Image 1 (cartoon, rainbow, N blue to C red):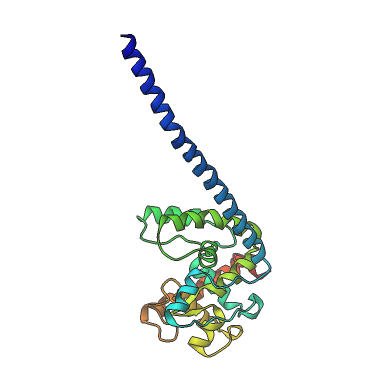
Image 2 (cartoon, helix red, strand yellow):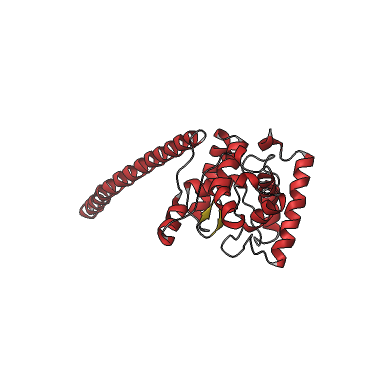
Length: 246
């Protein structure tokens, strides 16, 4: 009996001895995972602060498209050098409550959920963050990172800066990024000279730039552009354009 008890005690001691290296390894991994996350957050926060003043370079998706296509078209322009029609049209088409939310449009999210996820609810802020910091795709890791970075960007970028960045990183056709390149590509004019109709067509292209054309609009896109044009006039009149026009 004593011998049996001794064997059990020895077995327990052996199991404990074996667990110690595993626990130590898990603590080591956990500790460095947290440190890595803290460093990554600090890096993103630093870049967000920098991009409040300095124009961001090409993002991951833009670099990938440049490699795939052998080059892209993109010319950065300040918001004041873009026709006032385009920011209004883009906000009306993509995120009518842009001036009212803090990065997420909760009403749009609830509507999207109610419709079974058949419609998108991403705001201009989320799309700007995705194009500057992240990659494209519907993966949960990317969406999680987007959800973490968007409030940070909203905290350090003004609404004017957010919209300026978005209008310079959004894709308007395959390999065509930003308002200036899009205006010249489709209409042969500078972004500063876009008309309301041209701006509405560019905004109508944004959700699906590779399958829609602002220069050769389908009947559906013409109807969509007309609705965007009306929406642009509405948000100008009701004050929902004030945050980027003041």
